[in-house]
Amino acid sequence: MISIKDCTIQAGKFKISDINIEIPTGGYGILMGKTGSGKTTILEALCGLRKVSAGTISINGQDITKKRPAERNIGFLPQDIALFDHMSVYEHIAFGMRIQKWDKKVIDSRVHELADQLQINHLLERKPAGLSGGEKQRTAMGRALAVRPQVLCLDEPLSTLDDDTHEDVINLIKAVTQENQVTTLHITHRKSEASLLGDHFFELSEGRIIQNKESFL
Ligand SMILES: Nc1ncnc2c1ncn2[C@@H]1O[C@H](COP(=O)(O)OP(=O)(O)OP(=O)(O)O)[C@@H](O)[C@H]1O
Image (cartoon, rainbow, N blue to C red; front, side, top):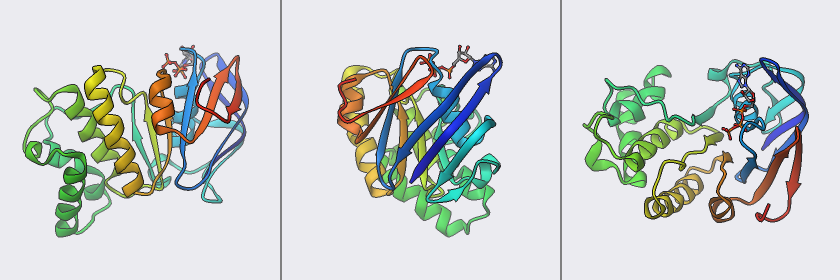
């Protein structure tokens, strides 16, 4: 379960208070709201990239408010995807597991398992230059999911895709998040994306979180 409780988060002069978001284990939370309303700021606080000055953040009942990003067991797909030019698709997916010093054979088998799920087997030796937008998204998704995080944070992961690719990747995200049993918080501006993927819906409006029962925000 993701629980953001009574949090105050600041980014420069920008500040949001009394932020409350709760998503049960295995749930898929959608966060919407106007541009500049603070959605990324909330996601960054959850991932540990931004401090909270009040309130608590916990995952599966464990208080992680003061933990470093690497200790939180959260997979993060940032808005700009942020792939590394010099690394192959294989190396991207293996990245977190190598840092955590997983056994080589286990890394190899996990890379192939995810590449299968994400349908990027044929791209494992390629570098990001020349990959399509959808292929880059899948690679970043593989990197985010590799170490079996409890929580996945997606910041507008599909914003650069055309309508057909968009639908393909939505179906893929749905399948992959279910297969990997992660609790997800996903920022999007698209209502269709929200209703196809989400089961918990939050809107950030004038600094307040409103929880909606349905996806039509
Ligand atoms: N480091 C910073 N210093 C000053 N202001 C910041 C900083 N980071 C973010 N902000 C401001 O905080 C506000 C919220 O930004 P944030 O990126 O969280 O919005 P958002 O809802 O994700 O927007 P978008 O939908 O456009 O991605 C913006 O006004 C932004 O300029």
